[in-house]
Image (cartoon, rainbow, N blue to C red; front, side, top):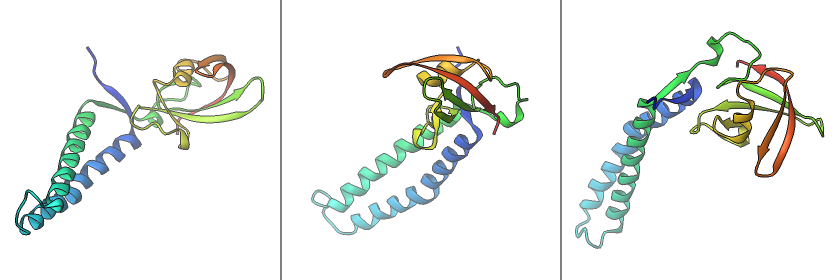
Length: 159
């Protein structure tokens, strides 16, 4: 069984940067905060100590989560894949609404990288699932919670 999770090069870099910051900046800071709070005496009634311990728990949990994701990711560099006009993971796709001629571009990325505000959609989203495997010029009917809409694939870019 393949448990590899697809991720773009940029997505992997962002997770590695966050992991590095947590280990080298945030973890030592919270350890120092705990030590400082211990010096204030009675730990039962020390709000600073309890807040620092809670923060430490969040940091350690996030470190474990990031290490797990990075160990199971498959980094796909779409710029190294020859352009074929076919929609694949990592490509940026321009689609045109057949009814309104409205044009929009999305990059198809992994679940952890998805951010609709910057036009990055998850490979598991209804739009991406409808586009994967199609080619430039194809008409695609995509069913979303808002209904079914027909799009034409205008351009597929490997950027």
